[in-house]
Image (cartoon, rainbow, N blue to C red):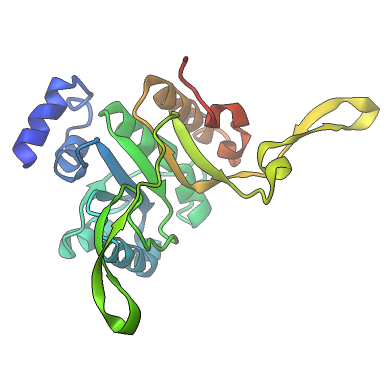
Length: 238
């Protein structure tokens, strides 16, 4: 129940006074582990957002929140009874294209972590076919027979950051030593994908996204790709 969940958030002494609108949403949507799936969207991609929401419903993902970057997207969500957090932000360049919008996600993630909620951040061009948090859903089997299917959780929960790489093997995913001009040692690796990753609500993860948000606010570059690979193993001390 939303009231009981809200009281639980207060007992955790999270930053609800600073982000009351966000707390009002996640107190009703987050699962018992205080986890949500969040997607950032503006009105440029409402058709894609519609497909995204349809996949959430078909996979029985009920702890999802759309971060609406403009009033039109907020109204779209409200009309369709989709949980949303209306948070208007502007990119450094003022652009509203996909790349510029993607850069705003770190400011939003900082707010989620500040209210004590772990977040699985997903781009809206992802189609969900199973529940990453585990649970049951209706699945059509052989001969069109609908059966109840149980999904295993896809989140390990043993690190502050769980992400994926665009690498195709261990060397490209985890990086390799490379000696450039004048034998200067460097490290090369394939980019980590910022379109789908999980952040646990820890102080370390919150500090990381705060740094990323500050850099995105002053630099026009994909800073997520520059995070050291070691951070994806464990940010918090043993």
